[in-house]
Image (cartoon, rainbow, N blue to C red; front, side, top):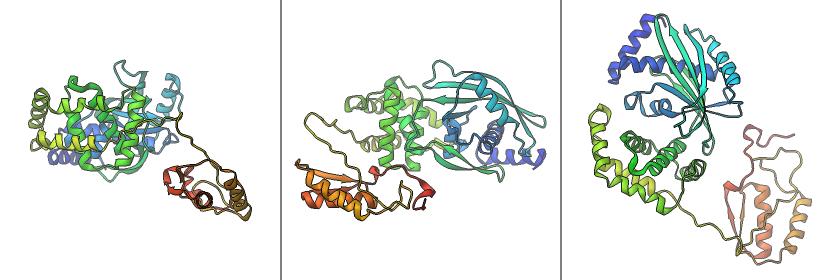
Length: 370
């Protein structure tokens, strides 16, 4: 696609989405830089997050962003090493006539919630130029793990896969910001983001796990007293005025009411389950490994069954368990289930199967022989 055709497509897309031409050009440069990351040997070292990811999920009309946010995984975050990595990424030629140049690497601004580095990048496409930042952060946890996002350009036929934050992690971070800032939050956009993300949909179980991880990592208390601040925010006239003013200034949100937003946030709040800590002085937990299983398969999520020797091991073990337990919880994988079933029948105890007790997911290696 040549310059004039790209200009025409960008103008058309800007008009159809009520966006500025500049914001669409920004998106064009950002997505082609992400494409280079996806085609590089560092595809597993960066996770797509932040405002541009939200723009990708919710639509460019919901926001315009001036930089790219990434989370680093298993990387040396020294300035020299990052500069070397990003110069390599920038140099990848994908025949799109865009050139990228790394101009500076520095620490992320002090007021940021994250630690990490900022990489300044200069881009050029014929006579079109763009300078932007790539913030590479460390710290927060992606729950349950980064997803493989299929990025599809709205401007042309560009498509690629890149690691990205799960919707549940994004929601958890937005919600933590709502709690930690409380009535001091003057960003109506945060409330609107939660409303829009709730409407996209989320897994309640994963969201709860993401809430625990995010609050813990950011040092925010996760208890009823601290969560009560949410209702204070939703009852604030000042917050309501900020929200309504923001929505009126943006065509995509002008029909969204504060009551609708409050309903979504309250539904999110009620889906958070707060658990009491177990007092281990009054409870005993016994951890039991499954008996010997089939030797010709890999472990992980494979469907290995107990061998005759493994069954004998578990029977002997059952006779040695003299304590009075309340119940047995087991992985639902066959070797663990068979072990737990023998013990539960011998002791006459309730058996609960829970897939969360499985060991490491070995993906495509499942059920393969050695």
